[in-house]
Image (cartoon, rainbow, N blue to C red):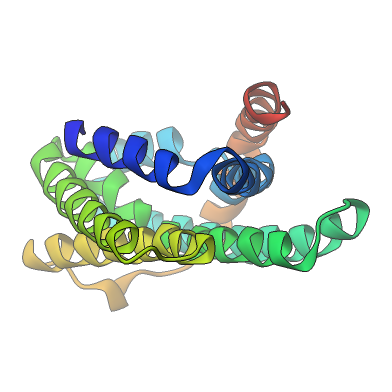
Length: 211
């Protein structure tokens, strides 16, 4: 976290107020819609995994597919929303590169599994590795005076690396991804329980990011 903090400061100084402001705007604009992709499932899935261990693959699989569908819906909504902004093409490109990261965030369901099993060390390993790789890449980009769009790609790359870390540790525990199943009954249960949390998340994000 300390390394990430100093690299973040260095990146902000390198990009300068205008470019870093544009980068922050793109991230904030995406954040206004990403609450939809999470579907308020995080705490619900952990609770259900603790309650019903026998249905692990269905609970995780359903959450994964809902999050993946939610991410695709977010990209569609963004494609519509940008038509009501004064963004130029370059800004919209930044927005969509950053927004693409939500697709790989669907694998955060593995994080929920490890939480339910009180195996936080694997979550930590994956996050530390992702942050370290991300920091190294940003330092290289700064040293080689890369353009702003390269830093937008690092946001997407970060999510891919983190997803790979989750998958690696999940498989290492002798679990199999292809056993994940979509159960429509569980899906409706998730959506019903998650609806109030989605609204809460959206309001919170708007308050934090609207400026």
